Image (cartoon, rainbow, N blue to C red; front, top):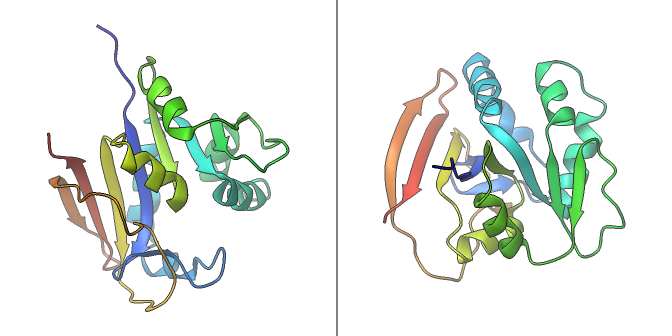
Length: 186
């Protein structure tokens, strides 16, 4: 029997639901959650990743940051296969990247039927919303940072149908952040 790939959303967000501050790439709130535990979780989780999926804005921001960073996480981010979904991007130049201009949900549904390691979405709220609308996520992994921004870009967009979830794990970190893992209820 084939080991079908799962689609997993992974994001750090504020207690009030923002995955980005009011300005693009305003991610300073990540520092409220970051520490040895979250770093180790990130490195452990990297072993599960077969392909990272991005929308254009997140892809460009990640590429800009990680191509100049060093260390184990940078090595992973620069070597792992990546797919960017965009109708406006001219090319995908980050190492090991592929540009898909077609329907993201159709492509992801096809990728999930393949054998291999799991598919992860980091950031990319618009892409995540389109995949949620089609019921493609198998798991939601969130790190809730102990901060209220009161302004920013929400991870979960309004509209669409509600989705009931089952809690798989909750874990408090020394920084005050909380890791939450959910799966859609069948």
